[in-house]
Length: 254
Picture 1 (tube, rainbow, N blue to C red):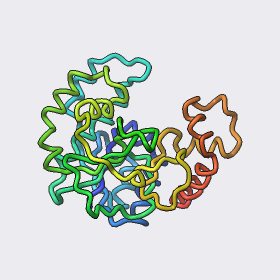
Picture 2: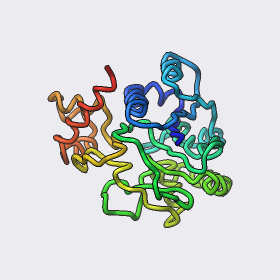
Picture 3: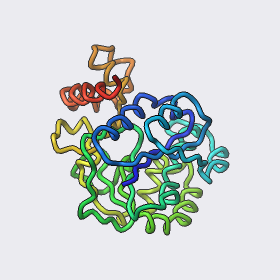
């Protein structure tokens, strides 16, 4: 199965460590074929990605100019929006298989995602914060039905264009609003969060919230006041799990 993640040039630099962990763990633990939908110039990291067998698909969100017209404000940054809305382009690039996997770049693959009897109508996703709350999904891991998602593309883009700067969580907010209850449930093991605790059956670990550098800082005894309060709260839910998963992540950076 093809695996996609998306980034613009700024995001590539900011999340370099996360990206290296994601790619290295996918190569070691899965049969996924990695592809990045990328808006930016070539650099040392893009060279490394290609050396690891990652196909680089150059693209720019059609919402780019519309995003530029928005004002930066707390909770909304144009530079972030330019990267995250690339997720909508994934189905347009998938030509090989009827289903594909999208993830954010801050994941670690613990085992090979086996689709089995998962046949989402448009896409499957898992809950955001509470593993039992299916009223709102996290779009950081999505199993996409390529043809069906592509069929919704034009309407989704038009809706998102009208809602730019108004939705919470950028494209994730737009997806939740647009699809409402018209999405399938993805096993939570495919989008497992460290603050949920340790899970030997987790397939994809999503560092949702604090990333590698912040987790390492906290585990190594860093001062709490310099860490985003929300991230500190998530870390405090299960420091043991964060430390265990951090040590696993470190093994992919050697």
